[in-house]
Length: 425
Image 1 (cartoon, rainbow, N blue to C red):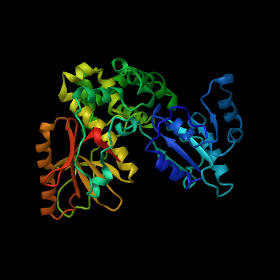
Image 2: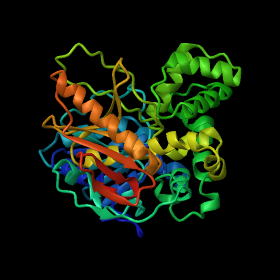
Image 3: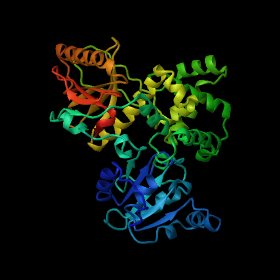
Image 4: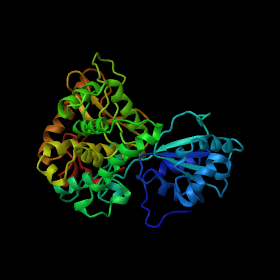
């Protein structure tokens, strides 16, 4: 294997390994710098790096002239950044079709290319695994004393998890889950996300489809998304926000175009609304909750520093919610579950919903301070009571994810309280 020295094991490996046994090829998708290539190398026996500048980008040129030549090598073979030569997708699909062998090729991609030139979707041939930046459990900043699976199976044991300061939580958010940023000194760890966004605006957006966009408007949209992190704000509201705060006029189609590019670059990861088979007349709001793919990008887009966030805990509360939902989604997907949010027209809501394949689900509230736990637990109990009274499918689990609690425990009323720095899959 080509496992790099210093590689940290990732939770996505579980799904990755499963897909290598299921499909002829597996494509790992996700934002740049999240660890896709290193995870792929940990399972590959040979590799072709399309973006390698050696010998005047010889590998890319070879792929453009004759894609099949790039696929020759010991299997599993890694094709890194395949989207730079989209015809490689069809070449891999063709090779997979030659026999019934599994796990022949591993593709990695940090952008979704135009479909032009790709003749086949790869259905049943190429499985896709979505990779995120690292959770606190993967970085080693969560003790893992509370398991999401154990919570749903009602067998989590109460535990003292240790004190966590707000300064620590702010540091985790500013640093983000980027594997290459873990050893960066705390006072400069925010530089990575800032430069990441600059590269998105200056280079990556153009590379996706060759269209030059107004960088002033792009930055205004990024700022607005950061101001509305962890909210259900609509595109129309974002447009008004840009006009009011930045005094820039951006039409709806431009906003939609920019958001589409952000999604294709995997820098956004919005949280969809939860849909239940409700027999009541309650109307569920369908808007997604806005999120950057990593909380550090929201911090960078705001232009915030650790000191600024410490002096504005209201703003940090939204960033903290984003960080918790980022991790909760990773833990849910590890357990083959999905994450949503819930809000109805009467104002009943839950910050996060985790639903398992068998239909059981749990409602989660996210609070920074321990002094907010009681009110959050009451809201969760109220939501469950309303659903039971109206004949809906109630949540199996109620849980408050907290920032500054020093214990993971189950309350007498059945509500779990778990620090984000103690949670694992």
